[in-house]
Length: 453
Ligand SMILES: *Cc1c(COP(=O)(O)O)cnc(C)c1O
Image 1 (cartoon, rainbow, N blue to C red):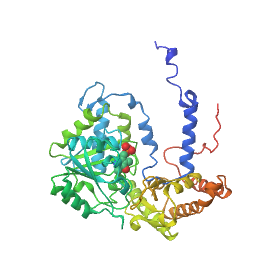
Image 2: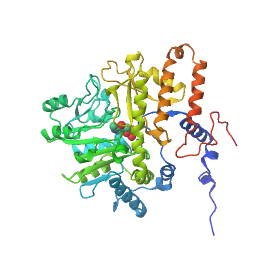
Image 3: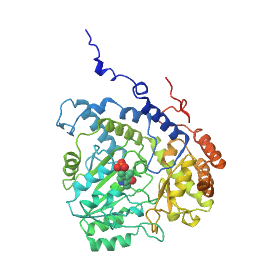
Image 4: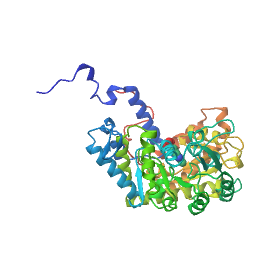
């Protein structure tokens, strides 16, 4: 005999569309926005249908504090298998040997992965050096201002930044070495959110070794390119490598920490993630990371990573041919930094104009900027649109749209519904919707979604 559903449980098997119309409609609108615009935010990507399916699975119901084989809860037979598979695939995707490297796949996101890594590597008030935020570094690498310690990485640890040269935009390793001699850090963090060039790990290792410091690479932005062997390999010389899984790696939103199996780093990292910094792992996310890592280890992903970089080069060159200036003059990665000061514009203004024509970008500070609140550039990335099968010639078109948007600068403030702007917006929409959309079927979506029954 089977039981009836109690009245108070009657909502539990109702699809979202019926159960919560407001949220459902907003999701539909967001799907259309993603489909109909040019997504150039360098930290974003379009993940796959399989990743989203795992991410939205009933694995979200399970508590599993601890590690596979050593949990604080029962019922983890399959959860253990999922996390073990995820860890195995993480090592495979990054071409690592399990004798030398291990990985923790439980961090909720990149920032929490970084704080856990700091907790594992150094003591409160120990000194760390990371790339300065205005130079393209990340908040979690020790960011503070003269007025305020902003990131927990500067609240709980003593931080001193290193910077890019304001002349050429490249990391100033010479000054980093000099300052490290004065500051004597216990940890040097490399990796960035807005730096278009590759890293010299040999130089960084040498500087870290002069002080017996750990070297940690945060490859949040470039992990897909590391997996695809398009950039230098940080695993050769670093002690710990952290990453997000949702940027170039194209997985769900989460983080991972890789550690060398030396100096007890395995225990230190695992204990730092849980119980020091987190509670129960998000098993739905871990299964989705496993799916993304399987994809990242495939020959197709290598082609994707290669195309991402070729597209960034094509975008950069096309912008230069329209008369723009790039920080460092080019790129080794998935992103270009466009210096808008020579054309007398701010990043905020160009970001706003682009938003009006369905081009999504973000303002970014440029080496030599004096005012943090009025950044002089924008950051453009090719990873998302490459997932939509854009090639070099499509990015030449994207550069043209960016150039035409910038030409609108004089109208924008005067009159918001300028006809040229709406024409360009329509043109961008037609162009964008002519490309495939990863993860979902966009055919029944439209710009003016009307509520249905
Ligand atoms: C995006 C990013 C992070 C943080 O990731 P979240 O998932 O947003 O917390 C950390 N480090 C770098 C270099 C990043 O670019």
